[in-house]
Amino acid sequence: MATANYQDGLNPNHDDEEPNHIILWLDANIGNPKEYRHLKKAFGSNTDPRESVPTQLRRRDYENLLRESEAQPVLFEGIYFLLQVFNDKNQCLKAYKQHSIDKKVFLITSGRLGKEIVPEIFNYNPDASIDKITQEPCSSIYVFCQNVKEHLEWAINYINVEIFDFDSTLLQRLLRDIATYFINRAERLRSDPNRKKQTLQRLYWAKRLWDQYDKMDQNIPADSFQEVRESSKMKEINRLIQQIDPNPPQETYYYEYANRSNENDDENIAVESEN
Image (tube, rainbow, N blue to C red; front, side, top):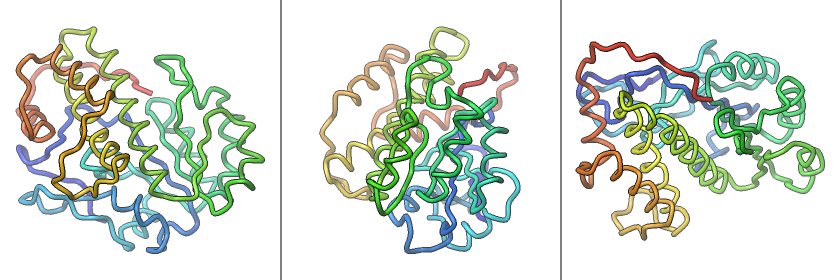
């Protein structure tokens, strides 16, 4: 499968730490190119380190992912992420239990399999929809189905389980929630003056994702150069960046700043759980 490998200096979202965020995707029809058309466009990879633009994952990539026993590095809207896909509920549940110990897990599931796995997740962890850092409710489980009313009957028993019948709407919500997660992590990391770089990285990741969220909210095509109206949340992100770095890079913020992090760092920074 194509993975997000880059030579030093070419990865636009390099992180010195192992990603503490992962997307688990459970659906019997994950390899069907007619399913999740909008959502699948958000995932990419790059096996050619000379190219900065990632290529969209294809059907064979998802088929290969199904055969992988471990999560694989991909790009989600240009952000380095771990992704693991399943068509078997038990394997997905096993991965959830494994990764939720030290990672923030975002779960996408079909309605039929969601009806089976969501109760087991909450039985394993009643606080599955509570942020461990802020202790506030947060969305991290997304159900995609054809009949929202049918699946609301069981999902209503579980806090913050979101249901969608359009994958474009699911993608928009996922962008918002992951960006919010990065903002919350940055707020925590900024208390440590030795982790300024990690704090800014998460803010720039949040900015990139929120930019895509705003584009969808304003009905602007993802590849359009049309100016995006600055939302109140984007103003908040920019304000946080300005407070930490009074002279941030302009325009190409996700590339130019993150590339500074590609220089080898001799210092050992302890990796804390961020889920």
